[in-house]
Image (tube, helix red, strand yellow):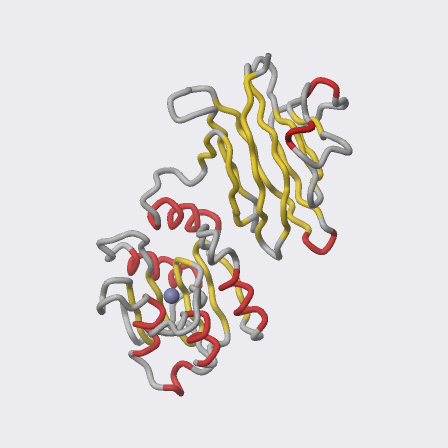
Length: 270
Ligand SMILES: [Zn+2]
């Protein structure tokens, strides 16, 4: 890294990733503070005690340096989880420091943090954007000790970023079962209240009028199979590509500015 040179946005994302790769524990987090492409400071989790990467990087700088800076962080900044925390949250610190922009690698899938860091920044007029798709995928794979992040197994709930060209996921019937169904989320239009769920030709049926997985007893009663479904909040779709011996129910729970929350459930086709 050259302290006198102006880096491109992509290079700065890469430098934040280099930082997070220095972490010896999960989750890995790296941060880079910049102004006009010039790197002012860097930080990674584990560099100084239990402090978070964003704090380590910002505390190396003067108040004036922090003001108006752009911070690249590989993981969504944390929020205060309970009153009386000895060290404030990174989202608070970023707001107090007068940072102008935050560029995030991945959103924190932790249900407690649950998009709150991202929202807190926006509410305080900090511009928020995301790493490009390719780098985001790399960060997702390396941040948590959970194996592949594009993998959905059995049933559950997940929040995923649907920025740029969307996200491709693979639904696995169970950890030991090799059967899979490919799905994708794209064309998020939060202002219009929808996001497109995709899969193979004729694989998707909308469970019209159904609001609970328990009310789907026979997926075949739903008509007009398609390669995609335009999903609005609460809507349920059934995905079963031709020849697949199981199907997956997917419900869109919530739409955010750049990401969505959904749940899924795999069922054997009987
Ligand atoms: Zn933090």
